[in-house]
Image (cartoon, helix red, strand yellow):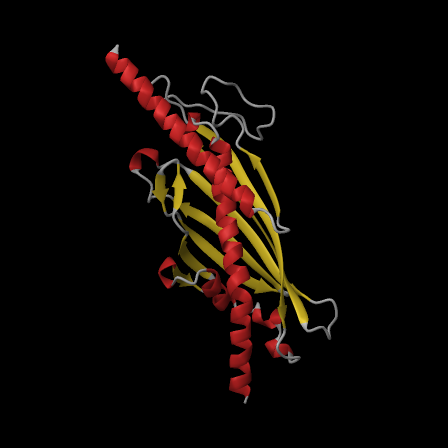
Amino acid sequence: RASRASTDNCDLLVTRRAMTTAARVTAATAAAGHGGLKGRRAGGGACGVSPRAGPSSNNPRPFRGRPSSSSSSVSCGALYSSSRETRFTVVELAKDESKSVAHYLTEVERIVQVTFPDASRRRKLQEGVWAVTLLEQNFFGVEFSPRATLRVSHSDGLLTIAVSELDLSDLPAEIQVPAKLDVGGTMAARKKTAASKLANFEGSVSMSLDVDVPFPYSTFPLLRETIEAILAGVIGRLEDSLRRNLPRDYAKWAREKVNVNA
C-alpha cells in the first residue's frame, strides 16, 4: 500500500508539473500574439485526454491508440498547426532599382544568414538548401534542439521558404517518434507607388506537425495547447529575427552597393 501511494503521489506531481509548464507556455505565446499579428491554431483532437476517451468531434484526424508493453500505455497521433502573417516597413535608400528592397530579396543566401544569424546553426548543403538547427525547445521538461532542412528560393518578386525533413534525434531514445514537419512561407516587397520611399515587407508562414505523441505524454492535460504553443513560438522567433535584422541588413546592403559603385 505504501508503495502504491508513493507511485500515485509521483504521478500526481508529474501531472501538476506538466500542467504548470503547459500553462506557462500557452500564456507566453498568447501574450506574444498581440501587435497586429494574425494567428490560427487548430488540431490535436483527443490528445491530452484519458487514453480511454473516444475521438473528438473537432478532431481533424481520429485518435489512434497503440498499446505498448503495458496495457495502459498508448501513443496519440494527431496533426498540429500554427500560422502567422507579418508586415513591417523600411525606407528605401535610393531610387536606383539595383538598391531597391525588391532587389534585396533576391539575395537568398543573405536572407538566410539574417534569419539564422548564428552560423553554427546553419550549414549550406547545396544551392538554395541548408541544414539548420532550431533553437532549444522544452516539451514538459524535456529539452531538445530539432534539426531540419531549409529551402529558400526567389522567383517573380516572391521569396519562398520551405522547411521539412525534421530530425528529432536529439530527443531521448525512449520518446523518439515518427514526426513530419511542413513549413511554408513567402515574403515580398510592396510599395503604394513606384515613387514612394516606403516599402513594406509582407510575409506569411504556416507550420504543421504530424506526430505520434508517446505515452505518458499522450495523456497529459493541455498537450495540444503545449505543442501548438511550441510551434507558434518557433514562428514568433523567426518573425522577430526578420523584423529586427532585415531592415538593418537592407540598409547595410544598400550602402555597400553605393560604395562599390562609387
